[in-house]
Length: 85
Image (cartoon, rainbow, N blue to C red; front, side, top):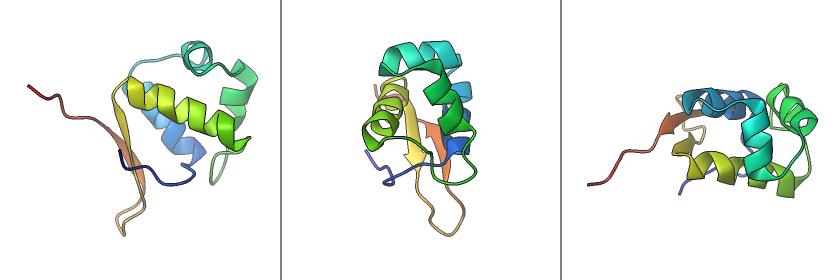
């Protein structure tokens, strides 16, 4: 899985929305608090928070089917992983 070191808050918010997950559901799945998710999503640049919490949130979103797209000249983003089979 390709993921940059630290996604932006907007990428996390977009990823959560893309898979139809609430902030509460994401917090529960990643074992962090709702205020932690809110702070991450509200970040102007790279998601704020302890690295292990950001990683846990990203893993929960990736498990739900999201891919984080690194900055590659076209801008960082997110997309749904292509279903195999």
